[in-house]
Image 1 (cartoon, rainbow, N blue to C red):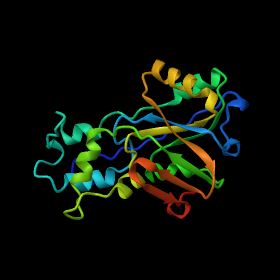
Image 2: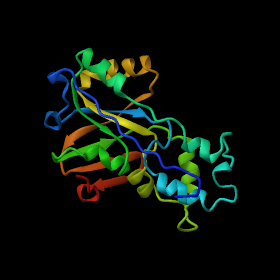
Image 3: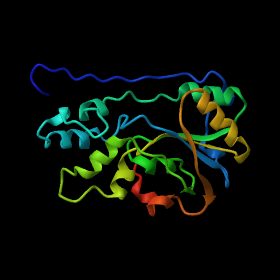
Image 4: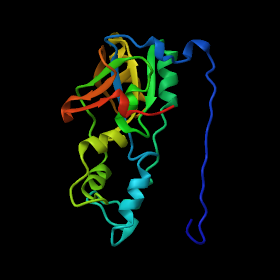
Length: 213
């Protein structure tokens, strides 16, 4: 703690009003489509790294970034909340096989469900510009942070992902637009070893790289 400062933390809980709206990983099927909802920035993960970078910048959080905001302002961009969109999809009868926040563990979170599926990503969203600043200001060396570390630990433009039936894709994209959230048909689920394959970046995260309870 720094002098004359206070540390705040919080949590939120919710209630699923209808038993039919409970999302269960057992419903994931071969051929399901992965839709990614774009993040608004760094959200709540990777801030330890971000603070470490700030400590090595001459102007710290006041460092001006190429897109006009200071580094501190970019880190404080409000996190998108996707509850309204998920409720809308379920009220419209769309079967959500699985849903996951892309928070700690980055894109590795896409394989959080216990079942051994392969999650193949063919399109990726454009990350918020703050990620490029973070990537090129590696506090642990002179080389930029690798794609493996960036996508393995940060959201890199993906705030939330859902797995749905192929016939529901357009309905999901339409609902997302109504909520002002950018959505991308990013990939699919297939039978195979448990892993996340990010084809545009030539990355593969195997099951043993995700250690969460």
